[in-house]
Length: 266
Image (tube, rainbow, N blue to C red):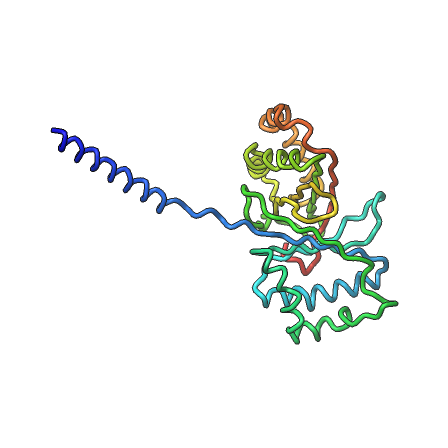
């Protein structure tokens, strides 16, 4: 009897192990989280704007696409009374940090790029094509591991791309805000309300750390305002924002209204 019982238990254990192995095998692999480079060119004159536009449109983006990097966003700020500084912002999706580290060397060996970008590359010290370049490196949120192309209709000139940066007082509090987006459901709520998010990212290198950044898109400013009104009135947000565990997790926020250039993939 003891032998039968042991055999039965062994059989059940093997069956359970088989089911567990099957479940592991059937489970979908965890999506690879992309990295993003957000590069901002600050420009002082119309000549610099034209020179950098020409370089990005005719040399840099085509060269990156030859390297297999697709879906590159290029944006400019919508004019405002509070910020009249000229900028061009490039959003680059990457599969790894190593990929970013190899781009410069690969471009240096691309004769087509070097020819097309010659005026920009070989600009003199007293006639540079920009004032400064700043770069932010991000890693995609777990709830949206890759950039998405927004589903928008209508004229590109009317579109509003809203880039937000949320800073936190400490690293621990920053991770709490990231958790609020992921486990807390902010990402899901934005998706439900059709905010057309391009990316959500943890900033791993930048000048406003600790902070996160994300970009949502709208067909025009009226649509943008209506979407945020719906967000502010949603039961999900009003329940989430009063949870004690998420209190005081943003110390400062910046909002940038952008529009896509004609040569942007977005």
